[in-house]
Image 1 (tube, rainbow, N blue to C red):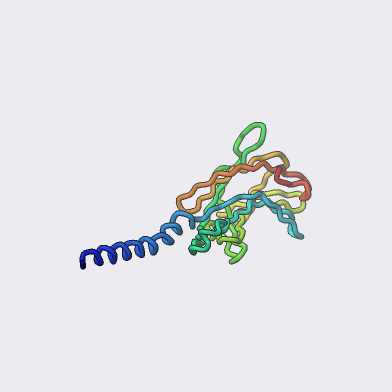
Image 2: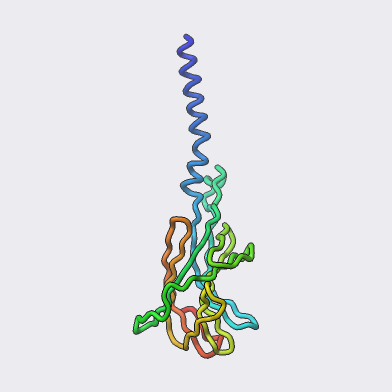
Length: 180
């Protein structure tokens, strides 16, 4: 008779252990940073800037949210190449990107991608008809002439490596310097 109760107690404790292990397991599987990319433009009195917005999407599944699964913060490192359209000639290769976290106002070669907030990779600045590529390792701009180009991004977040390409046009006026 006592063996019967010991078996029942063992099964109950086993089920409790499984119930306690499920949320951390789901957090490990579904809580990793999930980045999405969108080209964006910003214009003010200092000129126009082309940037790549990086958003760490929140957990969308209601069941996972109820179990306490939250999207984790990710550290983002980015670099990019600039390629001329048509000739496919690389103007610049492996440019370290200056990454900015909008929520914390952090700026550098490595920045946080917080869930629900946007981080940005600054690519190009055009002011008074003078355009330049923003190199995260240097304070000055690398000049670029009017034309059609492709930015080829490599974004690293933990063990995830994301590739993203987008065409852009540099014009003599700020208003016509755009992502296409």
